[in-house]
Length: 452
Image 1 (cartoon, rainbow, N blue to C red):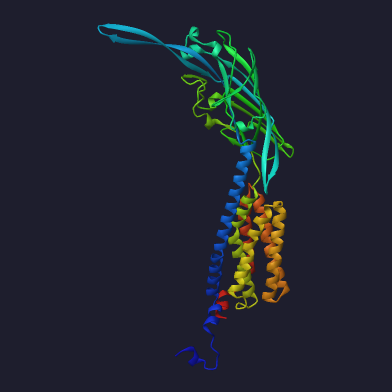
Image 2: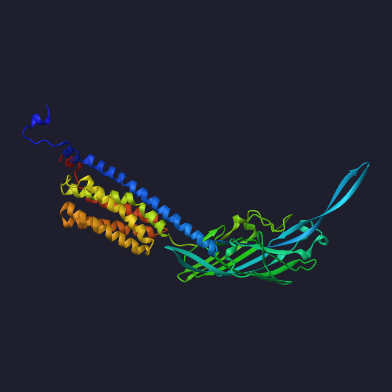
């Protein structure tokens, strides 16, 4: 016997009414809508990546014209020497002995290397993008010690008059002035060669050491790195940039970061890296193997750019949608109007919330991020609050849910700006939100609600 036979006078619910009247099924519908809204979220994430790629292309083009990342390798002194090779050759029944002369090169790294760097950084606009450029006047000084006996080279075979001092930079486009230097034998000018810059230096026969200074005027962007070639390398840097990111194989021993800029000092010993102070080869411009693994310095870091912030904000969309839809569902349950909100209305509210991320991205490319975030948040909250009032017909409910949306947006902004504590802030925020939902729904009898 069916329900109609038992209760002939009771009007029968349609299949659609029974569907929307089911608590369990409605929750499943809400979950399905949240998953469906991930399609436009995915599209927005791709758009953010595309815009960031365009920004990176603009940065690369600007850097190629101004000067890119600068990596300072040097100085190194190359001193040629003669090698005599004995060759025996049999002609008929006789042996002929020939002595052939070749040239090889002894390479020496500094015993002491000191670098004083004062990069002056500034931001510039290229189209809608903000770039960071810097100018620096480097002073390098120190001394070399020559120990040919350790290399098994006889001093009479050394070509002292052919010694050269060599160094290289990351991007030669950034050379602003002729590199000049001075040493024990007088001044010299570094001229470009295939692998960097080189200058002949005057060494006296039997020289045991050589003191030098080199001045470099550089322009660059993104980063500045140094190779610790000295037995003891000391770098002192002072800049007006107030958000440096120290990077590379070594962190500074001392640093101070203020609103006006930063100062940093490094002291690196030869024991801290894995290449020799002197060696021989056939190349006139040889350099240490694995030197790139020992670079250290700074990146001119822009605290979380707009694309990183936009991408991070999108990652919170599931929380936003889930909590907002859960709040709608609780309002329906607590006001006994479980059938009043149609899935299409949920879908429209979700679409408005997804549109927030698109507004944020487009606005933040033209105005400061905080202003873009405020405008996008206010516009979204006002739109949804007005729609909620029309849905439930109650101003108090609309204000309550509008306050929830405002709290979520404030929480998200704090999480986006707390770079080092984003995970902690997010975890605490989620815990508090869950606690509020559990408190509000603590007296709801879900079984009774399902029967109704």
